[in-house]
Image (cartoon, rainbow, N blue to C red; front, side, top):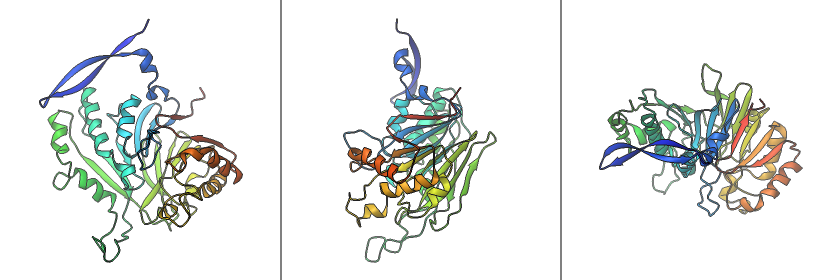
Length: 348
């Protein structure tokens, strides 16, 4: 006999918000990714792909982190991560931290959609949120558009502060209506903070991002991603750690420094050494499997997760694994896929 549970869903009819119920099979509920989360520190893959829409259906970059089964932070919110979040069954009314590795659309495209659903999740849970949403991302590196091009002399990438303000500020933000929307559905108050992280990749300093009373700690280090200001992040909790490189060439040893001794290292797996051809822009932005292998063999994470998978690397992931192992890495290697959950501290 199948069991069913009732779920409240918020509907809008001609601007009027109503509640209705649907029935969900308990069998289906058991298959939700959120029900695979257990242990002290977990990461759910919301997006394991790159910027190209492909039949494999991978969303662009995005990861949801949990401590003791509770959603705590989002790291990147690329296109398609909104749908993955919906399919996961996770609810994020109390989530307060959005971390961006860099400001490319395949890492930020669903940011506003997820921010808005956060307030709907509050309303659906009968909560009235007043805590701010905290955004973190790289500071600008002031690399200008070249002479003779539109915008010549202007920095190609803004600070994360300017980026987030451009979305949500109540005067200049393109989505400034959210300031009225949050109170309009009696979900509380819409407010946010932004903290820019150092992005000079010649600096190998690990910088604090935030820490909380229960021991959750996030730190960052600048990484090289061509002309793009970019950072990698490390999440530590209860003696466990997960590192995400973001997009990087890994020409410096900064990823090694951040990831040494980590339990999981999630790595940019966008190119091969021979595809696209060496010398093209992609090799100035991403890490080859050969370099990934050296980094992993030196940092020695317990598990290496191949993510940011593209049409170039998708059919060659076995080859990527072989190259990484040949560089001396002896840990586990896993291929990321959307809605996969990696748990740490679940031995009990």
